[in-house]
Image (cartoon, rainbow, N blue to C red):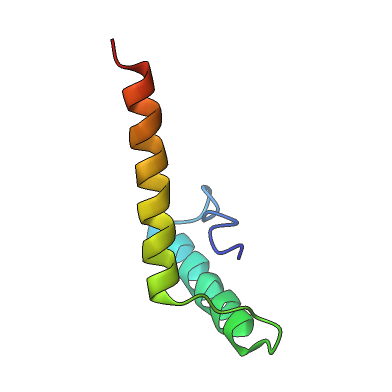
Length: 66
């Protein structure tokens, strides 16, 4: 997923630039969601992945503690 791929043009007025950027992000997301090849990940899977990453980081931090 490449949602945050381009920030607004810095030379454009802020509101206009943000509006264009936001509309592109939504259009890209809808296009990706409509693609039959899109792989969906369940919320439970994401939560487990976050928990696993957090546990791994905590273990690393404990290994580096004084």
